[in-house]
Length: 287
View 1 (cartoon, rainbow, N blue to C red):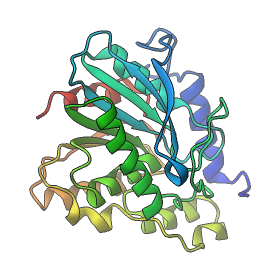
View 2 (view 1 turned 90 degrees about the vertical axis):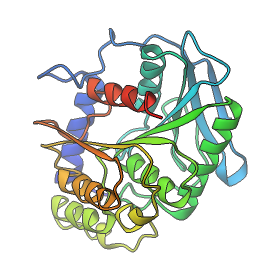
View 3 (view 1 turned 180 degrees about the horizontal axis):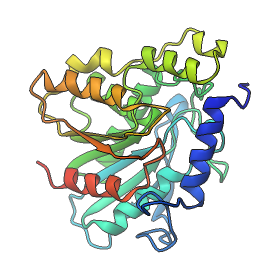
View 4 (view 1 turned 120 degrees about the vertical axis):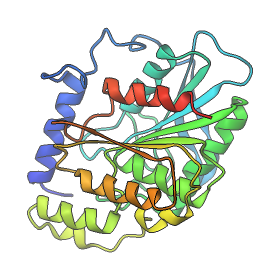
């Protein structure tokens, strides 16, 4: 177990602000008046089997066709508490946009506050959970969900470690995702882990070997026609903008339509911001 070092203290304070309601410009807090917060899930269910059995919560727009757009939301590494904000964003998206099935996916190895547990290895929340097995399980879940809901398009929104996994799916399974939003992405995993070790006061755990895939190393395998939006706060000390920018530049060198959006003064916990929902809405309309 890691001690409550500088990194973890910063991240804990960020999560407290995210879950409890932030002050400031009012765009990043999850207030009770935001769309979809009182909407119960249409289904609480599972996807996959055995070592790839993952928990999901699904929310449907009030109006939809037989061929909706599927939006799947992945949470970050969540070092302090069981993650559930992926469900919050999914229900907000379903409430805000028509013809959508929005699914909050519990990443492999994680347990949510209700005790649902996804199969797999969680790891130490040090960038060690982006392995080929995890990426394969998420890709299989996305494929099954697309078939289950007869989705016309699939948009994936990932935060932090969830963004890294999403980017790795884009590279390893290029026909799986139609469009993606990567928020607060540690897209260069080796250099990000070096950064985290410095932020974490030199903790040796960051030097432990990992089998994680790094999005930057796989950027040349991403379909250059896929719409991808990278979103990052300029004051993000956990995954500073340079990691999103470097990955974006690698995509742009291949003439990708990828966009980089920087939020002035915002930190790491931006996933429930109005801007994220708006950018997901923009991806919903792209073909």
